[in-house]
Image (cartoon, rainbow, N blue to C red; front, side):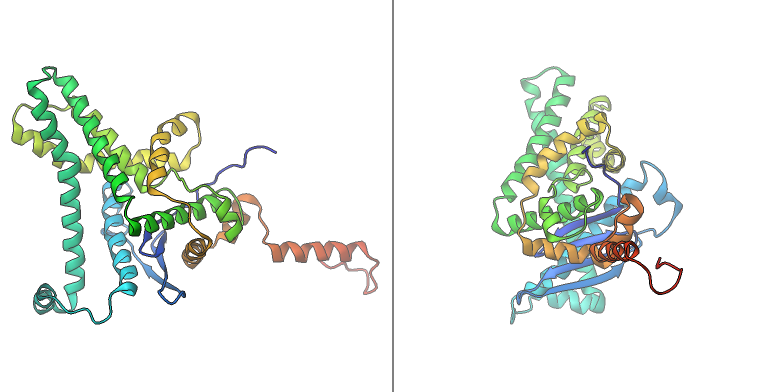
Length: 342
């Protein structure tokens, strides 16, 4: 039997605290395993920062908005999942009271925005600015500018990999990575044309080419190339360029990851390999309970049975059983007239 083909589904997701977020077009769902063992599923609509604006369809620009939308929706879903695990009787802090007093009903949205901004600033400082200052320090030992640009890129990638490795050692993050694996397994199961069952999902791969981990690695690799060719002498301009070019880098990385999700030629497999390797750190094998949560998230926003019928000629077990019964009846003598049951 030949290798089973893959068919792009268009769904994507994210692991949250004890759960999974899945998004299909503008609809998204968040399935969370609550402390009592039940699975809570919330369904919502998210059209994006600019909605259906044509600018969000322009190549190399759409990636910027897609990345921003992912951060915004991801933070919202993460906060929703965390709400099930908030400590009862926790005292309201002074900061909470100030936010409630100033922003009233919008306090939670403002806090979410501030959290996202702080996270982005931290990431920019750690992965973009810090590697530059380290390579700048090395100028006293390395005189070649081209070599320094390569060293800066290598440092950036090493910091990123080390950061991923260190946080993977945290117990809570490890469980998030297990849910991350469950998310990938569900999407791989569907895109390989298999029925979405716990057994089939558990047999599927926990690595996927459209993963955010791969996207971030492509961001690092693209930055190496851009900063190798774009050079200025002023230190302030160098730091400024590393910040200002982030949207450009994100746009290019998005197009690469988008291509990887829709093609299966040897070149795409080759450029996807480093990201798939890094996913060995950010995805872990889930248990069946986690897979059940992931399936709930998928089924809330995606009709996988119709998808499999249209793309793989799939018939679900009940429909197949009915057809088998009809075939058996057609093989028997008919006593109800000349018309056969269709």
